[in-house]
Length: 195
Image 1 (cartoon, rainbow, N blue to C red):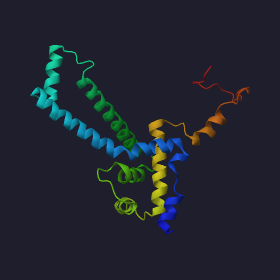
Image 2: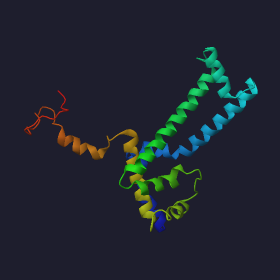
Image 3: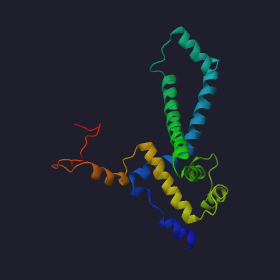
Image 4: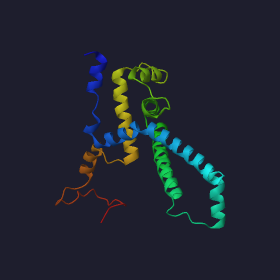
């Protein structure tokens, strides 16, 4: 087994951590959702113009002006599906931008996620990803790539799903009393104490 295969084999299995798995799964499907959404919008526009002889925007403007209700129609269902997909992509994009701009390793994590999952071009192998990353991350190796990819996905998962991961459990256990115990007297009452 060559060095690259051993490093990949040692990388974290997404099924080991639910937080990592959900974020990883979302990222793995990102390009497909973008493509599907673009196709869906394009097909809806074309079909609509053929059927109604006007653009979707013009038609909706005329419906709103006339006070027409499209509740329960195919048009409403299709519009809601497109809107849900768009909202999901916006959520991921916002979380990635927050990671990029606010996290201490945001710049590195952003580029790792971008070339691995978010760029319009899907790369056929890790070699291509690392080659592209080398312009943003000096001296990146396979080991570093897999480690940073895992860290980036965990950090993004914390933004997307909240800070409820395993790493926070020890802090929570230290702060909250165990059942049956009274909280330790620290000499002050926190302003946000739960009664």
